[in-house]
Length: 374
Image (cartoon, rainbow, N blue to C red):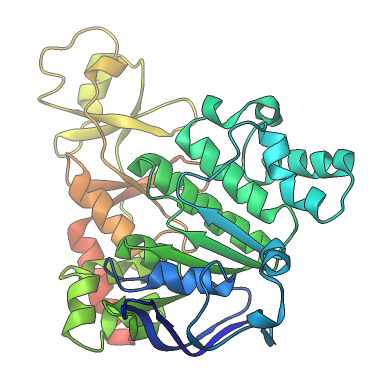
């Protein structure tokens, strides 16, 4: 557990970056600090490992005052991940990851073996271990940064906007990877971001900070969206917070209807016969969706159904109750060219279809049963 007890950071010119911050960060959970530029979120994070010294107040990590330890010793026991990974350019991937264990006295051979194991943990092939950071993609570098932070198995992990410099697709993959790792490792993670969507996706709890370094609200994502404490928080989480809140409701309440499918390579006449309300989903051998065909898209096609004949299918959503949400179900329906979202099972095969109307019906039923986050 990490505790901020009336912590203030005031610079010599009088600027107050953090003002009397009281905050308790739960052990084994992800706590996200979010807010506009100048709100003190990075300063707060860096005061935990004393890269920034607090002007007043107390910060406790597992009950111990951080000022009771030498900064270098403190930092070796706290993992730290920053934007652009911050890797040593002249060291290989394996040697980057092994840095802290070697500093702590682990023999080099053992530290390198541990580094190779951590490549598996963060989803990187071991053959990348001999490369240098410049030879990796941005997403790969960030994974190496996470592996390096985990190398000494620290109970606390600080992450300062680690995914903000990569493209949206890679960012989403890294977020999912972090959630997977956390489910396995159970670290106490303090994560800084300016992106409210990222905060809501990753955080067990979210602390919204105001400009001037004061705490505006500290709650679970669901409560933050449903009950912002004032206009500032409501504005920061966005006017579409009702849509975001759908992410906390299982999609399993949305009715999944049968969906007409046709295998790729089928005769076009068979594909036309399979159309239902003018549309059908084209699937591969494993029944995974590849795209749509319609009466319009097939109007001039002859022979066998080819990939070039398909209409992009929009987003998918997982039909199982654990990972599917009403938000992903609604997004799948709205992004689909047919107006029907494709639901897939745990193997990625088509399980059926869902419409925006069925999502709204499920939302109404959740409200009636008290299942809407409050």
